[in-house]
Length: 490
Image (cartoon, rainbow, N blue to C red):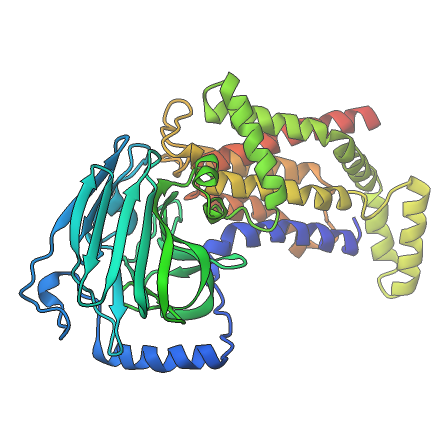
């Protein structure tokens, strides 16, 4: 194998390492904030607010000259089709139940009172008490006579809570999500998500800020989302604090605000039905156009074989089989390269002091053997989008939450508790590495290539079992295909 081919193959392998190590070794880059007139206005307002106020976790800690601390806030429950939400008269939310969720509301948000709406009337943001009336079990309406604001909340059968604010006078609004920092063993990180033109995130506990027209804002953690959407995109300044707050301050004063509040498992089809582009909270990455068909394929197979582990295996084998004609050329090229490897080694020794002659003789050897130095790499590169897309589906789709496979694998969305699959995957990759043309002329590269399976296994050990199952199945089936091609070309 020539140095160019070794470098190409090494680059392909390292690109996979970059993908799997991204969540652990790279922090999101803060985007620059472009100041305009509206931004400067909200900057000045936010600076004044931050110096005077801090979101309280309890009413007794709230100090505001417009809302006396002696006021006792009431709680109201909306319920519909086994969904329920507890909304306080100060516009905060303390509980949300969804029968389809795998984890409860507190497990997702991390605090007992994760949501509040504050209103400013020329002074500073503060919570305000509303007088509510229970219209029926799924509908409440309230008013604040001092501000002249009316509000109503209605829960539908899907658990989606629609809200609407109306007033004669324009007010400044601020929405606050509160949470705590947490990372699961499967590397799911609690984060604040928001959607403007694209999906973006801020890690809970980090200090960050951003501007944009928001479609929705949310707490996003472990395949669940607690989100507030806006009927019309609203210009807002977002900022996070070390204490775990995510503040969304509307840039412009408004008289009317409409949208919805949702707590749901991040099921692609369910979020698509809820609307407001909430389905885009499932981050399928750059190759999302491929990820969705793969997800549909897994769902289709699952309809006939109600075990997502089996579905992963079947779809993996199917995709590898469809890609076999492309892989056939790759394996055939590798075999030819393997045959002329001893000849290339001799040429490098013979012409080690004459690089130009060595290159000329090497190309002649390739031509005579009918081998293409890049023939084994280009097909692998062509398959990378499918590999990345499959990875994103298995890492982000909620279908695998609580889905067992067999034996010790009780949940495909979390790590293999005994690390059996990562070990098998590493062994399969080591076998595959041995089948590839060996770069014996460069001991350093040889050692790097041989240690790659161990590095992969270490990186993958805490990632979802479903992802390990996919890579193991794909690798071991690929080894079988490679051995078949090698036998046919002997």
